[in-house]
Length: 202
Image (cartoon, rainbow, N blue to C red; front, side, top):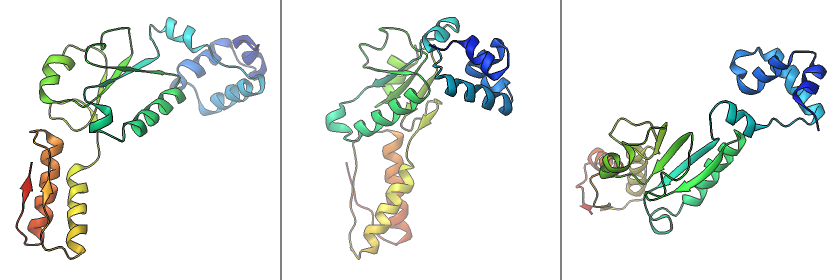
């Protein structure tokens, strides 16, 4: 089994350079990275990410905190889980699924939270000290990833209007949350632009 020393010898560089390519690629030139990666490939060298994580005081674990019922509320959750796990795997991280009761079991390097509501930010998220990304629009100042809810509903409403429907009704969720307000605004904007009366049910 090839070692870091073997890679250094093959690439004609120091072990320190190989280590920097693996652990801190941003500090190495593209030419050196290409040279070292080529040697790693030839020797079938696989870095010991567990050892690297230990040295860097990292866990290589990212938690996905789910605060809603996956099977009934969000049927696309399997696609979400697959996408997250693939990207984490590509970067040598493991995915750990947690709920509000299991959030503090075990260490991690960061968290992705989904299904959050206003009360969760005070009760669950505020005490969390690791980096956090929220899946879903929020107004609490946390980084988030989401679809453009307003534009999506606007386009859907315009499409239905374009089909010749005389009355278009918006059925929403009875929640005072940013994603729901954005969806309603998209519907209202499309209806107003078409000089139609809005009809919203929650």
